[in-house]
Amino acid sequence: MTHVLVLNGPNLGRLGVREPEVYGSASLPDLVAAAQGWGTELGLDVDVRQTDDESEIVGWLHEAVDTRSHVVINPAAFTHYSYALRDAAAQVGTAGLLLVEVHLSNPAAREAFRQHSVVGPVATGTVAGFGFRSYRYALAAIADALAEGHQA
Ligand code: DQA
Image (tube, rainbow, N blue to C red):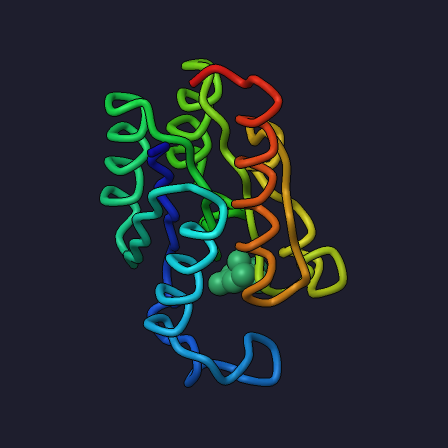
């Protein structure tokens, strides 16, 4: 089964507690369960991780390249300023793997600093604004690309 790393950046471990009016009342374990269920439906082996540590998420992107895994990533605040994460994400794309950037909220509709993503230009595509369903649509995009013959 195709392996997909679902990577989550800083403060996403606080889902359910952190600004529920923006990010919803469900928790990270709820997101893990939902993503694993969607993966099963879509024929993907989904591995969901979260870290507040930039070096750890960069290392996971290196792992994606080395293990030939596609990636769904919510870089959280790293989206807006982490060139280290962007450079690691770029390596996923140049390895011929899919990388979908996701956001729970729609950063384009929020504060000015959220309206720029340094990751977007090196992503295959971006899904934002649908809460947990952003992850579902990102996984479905990967499943569709594979069904259409994308070679990992
Ligand atoms: C977020 C949006 C980011 O601007 C923010 O820093 C996050 C979450 C989202 O999923 O909507 O932590 O990536």
